[in-house]
Length: 170
Image 1: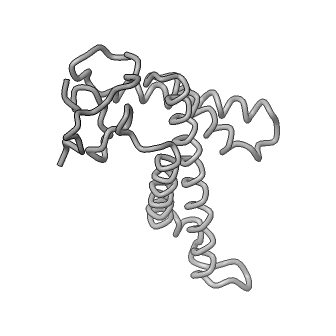
Image 2: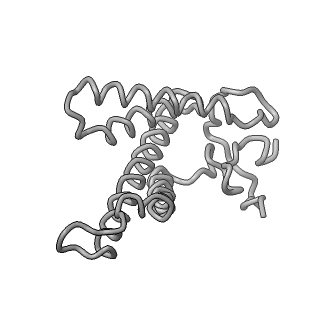
Image 3: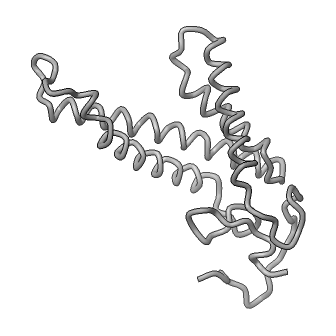
């Protein structure tokens, strides 16, 4: 079986997201943080003017208020996606399976992290379960088609690449 038959590929890159050529969880977490930062910038550019308004609060310039809004949005999105990426990756590595449960666990952790300042533990639990459920639902909605095998099969263990191996994608 070729590399593409054994590995699931990410939507945004041709590098595999599971299996022996998958990046480590720290790299996937860092990628989530970077994507979250980009989303925070886009969100602020699209909706930040509404938060800042035509007149800044007394004693603050519009630029300074916009910068604070930008920082808050980038931090929020980056931390959410970083926690999600890290927990779902760690769950995948520990369970040695790529299925909806990993993304549910990542969503639960990210939802709890986002709602940590909620007034009650019940609100945190509701946000956590709702986010986890949506993430698992997205997994089913956008699950890649099986390539050469079944859907939720175990990841290969002890798989060795041929001697002349290297990345076979370009």
